[in-house]
Image 1 (tube, rainbow, N blue to C red):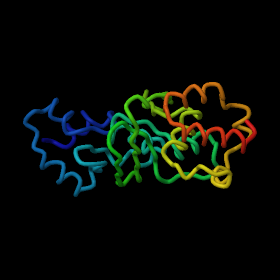
Image 2 (cartoon, rainbow, N blue to C red; image 1 turned 45 degrees about the horizontal axis):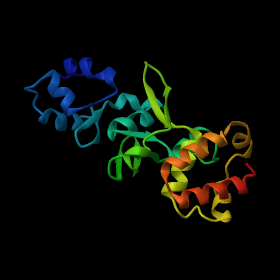
Image 3 (cartoon, rainbow, N blue to C red; image 1 turned 135 degrees about the horizontal axis):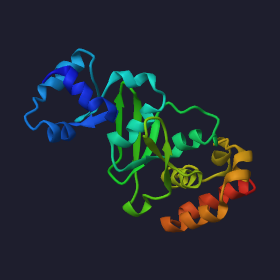
Length: 205
């Protein structure tokens, strides 16, 4: 397989899987992947998923790849809270929620963490458009907070809630408490309900 022909076909995808390559070229020699990685032409995101190193200069692409590396998934938890400015920290690891098993991946684009939830909890996320007609699925502010309280049970004291250092202006101006309570009911978790009420108390919501 000629590299130039391959790149011209696959580059605009951003990243691609082996299955996509075989759908285009059923007789493709998968040994090409190893050769092209060794030459620096490709980056392995995870087993069977690849990207082009040129995308490392585009700041949105690591987050875009999060949904491609492990699907279905959406960015949530600390990464989503940082995206909305709800927490002051810049998060180096991209944290997502998935209905698959918990997983972690590390590649040249960053570190990716996926926390598992039930299938019926895969809701409350929206696409955010980036360049070239691409989009990234982020939990809403309300769902990101609920995912955090649900998946990290140590947020069960006022001290731990305060340590989140949530932006009170954003909470009071943008958070939809009614929607958050409606979402919380779908988790069917008394522990989550208790942590949510504690968050409302600490931040006077």
